[in-house]
Image 1 (cartoon, each protein chain N blue to C red):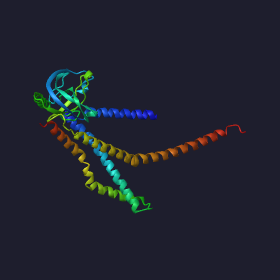
Image 2 (cartoon, each protein chain N blue to C red):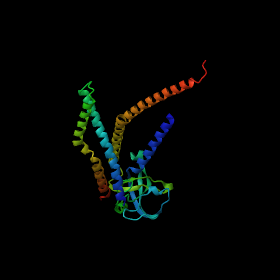
Image 3 (cartoon, each protein chain N blue to C red):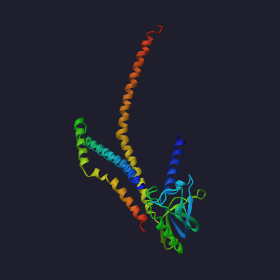
Image 4 (cartoon, each protein chain N blue to C red):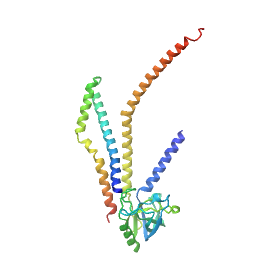
Amino acid sequence: MSFIRLLLFGFLALSVVYLSISVYSRSVRREKLEKAWAKDNPGRTDLAARDAFVAEGIVAYNASFRPKLIGLVYIVPTVVVIAIVYITNAN
Amino acid sequence: MHRIKITFRVLVFIIAGLFLHYVLPQHDIVKITSTEIIRTDFSSYNRIFYAQPDSGAVEQPTRDLRLINTDKKKTWLLGFIPRDSTEVMVYRNEDTGWIWPPYFKFDSSDLQAEAASAARGESWAVVTHYGWRVRWASIYPNAVAVRLVDGPDVRIIPWFNIFFFGFLIVGIVFLRAMWRQFRERTVDPLMDSAEHRFDEASAGISEKKGRVSRWLGTWRAKK
């Protein structure tokens, strides 16, 4: 019973971490894209073109390998827990 | 206000420090003298300082508790500075199971057997444990592992705590970066637009007020 509770609350806690890191990572990428646009097109005030550039960059980011790395948030703690279980109980 | 802030921060720091000191593993160099089992009746205030019954067993108000009696080498400063003198230390030996704190210990019986075996000889052992010994509340630290060593002058490197604090610092820095990004990209623009709207609204109110007072002025006696 307590094992199921650990699974449930562990999953919930890690999901919160996963979502916050995803949002943070995308936000950092968006900021980077905006800065790149500002550097390449100084003084240009065409907001539609800027938005299109940023949206395109975000789509490329979503398709890349980087956001999938955030899935490690689930894998690493699981591996750590299995390692601790083994180390604590092995004779 | 400044003083309250500092007091609050110091309090938070002390509570977090005590919490970590209770929960993180520590190593004692001991000579195990005997093992025993006592019947325990928990009270409401010392119950939280005990774990649950053995994983797989049922919870009762009273149960047996495995204890490990030792002579412990005294230390200064959380075990960093060794001393020559010894003192008596008693550890409990309970399963933490899948519950708090996350040691995932299921092998209390095996550990008790190891301790009993160590008690027969004269050899020194390193006991990994968490928790405190509080005499007046009958609280014992929980032994997690026993390792036989050659002598009392063994060098102990707390690997887990090193990694734990490293990870804690990285985590805090990361959390701070996330919070700053969130403030810069989400909260500040919202506040700016809210401020703008508030300015517009207050400008409208003062204009209206002007109109009302001007209308009232038409009723006032002309000087």
